[in-house]
Image (cartoon, rainbow, N blue to C red; front, top):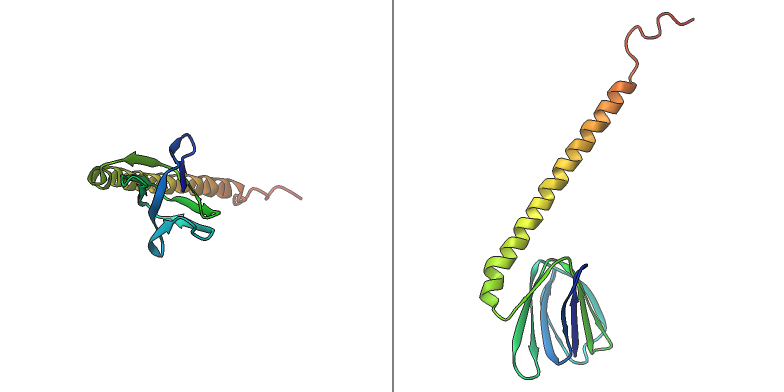
Length: 139
């Protein structure tokens, strides 16, 4: 099988001698073997693994994404971030923690942005309200 993992800026994995793939979506962990039915799912923040036909295992930490299987032979993953390694312990310890920290920072930034927008809307609404006595001299 062929495995392709891409981010918006790079191709993280492009390998053709893959025997099996394991990944995780909201329903849990699942595996893909040669001849798998066409499939599309949204991945969680997790570590994917795959085995080559020669027995070597590799890993990739993905920050969410979409996985598709086409024709039972092609697996494609589009993700925001991907870090590839042969060392599973390192990925779980450092990379997933980094991804989680980045996710929490993005949430905090979104919250701050929403607060700024709400304050701007309040200012606009307040400036559009008629002031008492503003129309007193009008006929």
